[in-house]
Image (cartoon, rainbow, N blue to C red):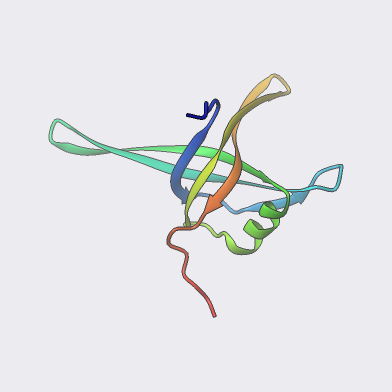
Length: 108
């Protein structure tokens, strides 16, 4: 069995506008937030635990997302967790390697 380290798969919905930009080196990247939910019962009440994840995508996939991905779309993301600091503020992101749109409507 192949050893997997730092692998994450998230299923949720897009929770922000997809911003496509170019880096200093000219490579395209996109950033957006996605929301995942867990449901459980506590004292007979249904509880929804929502979490927001910051996602970054690089290259051609980023350009495609900028054209097709919209607020509220359901997505399945495969990638890894990255952390970095800016001005002594620690940021955690999901670096996406592939994205699927399971319920995206087909257009002619």
